[in-house]
Image: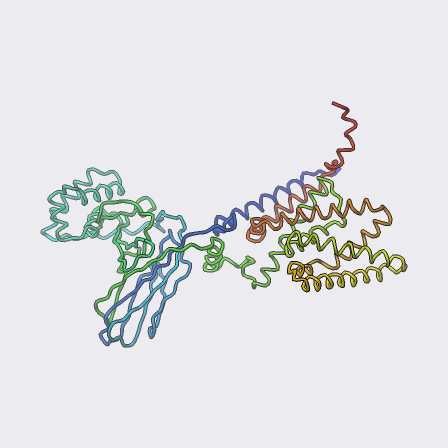
Length: 502
């Protein structure tokens, strides 16, 4: 007797691989596990303005690169300007250039972003030690005293930054702090005092996202490095941490906007919040990341539509195997109910049931006449196929004449399968009688209806197309049920007399 252990190992591997692939796709590519899920997106417009001096002009503008937001779409409009997007280790920048800029110049950059939920600012590596700031002679003594006073109340680089930020924004600041703030902005002073203790820190620019706001300006923040992460501080108001609606626009520590060949440059921001499909968003993100190499979404739309129907067949197959092997329902043909269920998806359930019954009933009547002609099997089946096509054409024409638009969908029925069904039922009628025909025919319709209900569920259609690993799970379940050799549930009624009266 062969051991079943390798078989069960195979089933377990298929099941685990299918679940793991589906979970990975949902988490890594943000594909929603349920259809209809919506996500919030932000569209931000940046308007760069300056006065041209009649000379060649070059505008360098920092572009957002925030781990908390994924760039979905970005574009720039600059009539007459050349545009280059540079991407280096420090930052991403848009560079506009023109041979001659005269008068007011307006350049536009537009980006659509979606939240990723990754609020932590992880450092790519250990930053280089900052260079020590040389204080002016009039500020050196005050700076040293203020720094040492705060340093004594701290234990780590992070706690020193926290205490320093608190000291800069205290209600009653020390005289040393007041002296230093007289000639330094809070952010600059905060960074210079951190650098004096060798703590990496840099000034960054952030934009508060508020729906339908216009002419917004960037706000200054400070990132302080500690233990593999950058921690965000607002030296202007003494707060620490990242606000929920903050977009870090520039994290390079350099200027946001540089203009050569122009004066009076400025940048204003407008923003708008929107709601979009989570699935469409995930597809767009995968396209941007070139992650569609092994996805059905890289196929043309016509082939995608075809596969959406084909990938429902395993669900119907699973229903047929369960209802026949475990429940014990008899059907006319093994997988004929699956094909009928696919037709029901196109015709709707009620129209499909009526159409199927009419075609089979008329076909059986004509088949009974053909049986009297003693034709060969090939000729008889061919005649039945032609008759089925004629019946479908007749019903379609009558439906059109009477204005029954639902009847036009009857053409979606598989004609060859219907012909074989009529042939099998006719032979069954002759050999087993009408009772068996109604049992198997009714069982086929019952199984087809249940398969249709399963295949037409929106979440099922979403899963079988977007999570291909689920088909490995279906395969594992089919193999597992294929090992069942016990009684069907409908067969248990034969043993009822053995139970006795209770």
